[in-house]
Image (cartoon, rainbow, N blue to C red; front, side, top):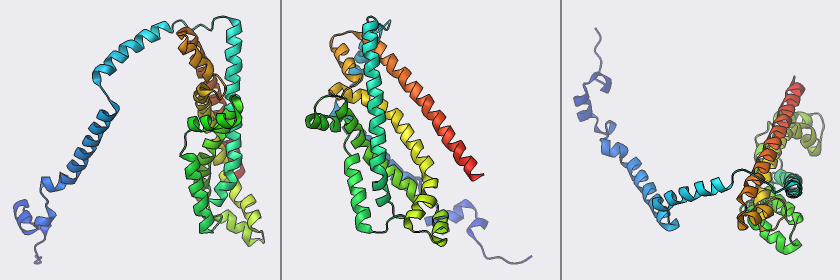
Length: 290
């Protein structure tokens, strides 16, 4: 039998703890950092609750009022065909605001995203400036942009389109640039190796990889912007939101529930259409690879 030098694996737990104390920290040392983080987050959470005035009693009272309002909303009623057609036109206006704003944002964001992508443009100054511009635009919510554009172009759906387009241009710029940077280098190098210039590399090597991803993102945000266009309509940027605000002020809760149902149906149809288009895009991409 060969002689072996003693290792920690050969020792009993008591002897091992005595000889190698650093390998066996105490429970307080092991969990001290986690406990400190937990207590710090709990303190921040409690401080935040006190700042915003969170109260369990107020919440319970509000649940009761919410139930009363829900009963007043039943059954949904538009108040006649004339009102229904008015709401339907306003809903179509909301969908148009979302569609035009999303398309405009994508068109503006794409060239900026190319400038913000490291694998397309190596100039650090342009890259940094493009990123910071996108951050500034993205940092302002659609509702704030709606208030700004209402003061610039006046009330109406045009201000809503500009608000959606401005806010989403920053979001699309970030998403597009990340998708471009995540693309493979092989197709681009293949185009350049055959004598193509940088424009050819972008057109035939980069775009076929990223366009399906970009279209999928645009379709998703079109669905999301339909809901956002409803909100900005409340401040006067056109669409169905203004009618919701008016009916709530007039305590016509049955009209409100009818409008909400119309919005839900519209969003469901848009989601269905977007899902079909995304599947078609993925199928076309897979067929092209095959």
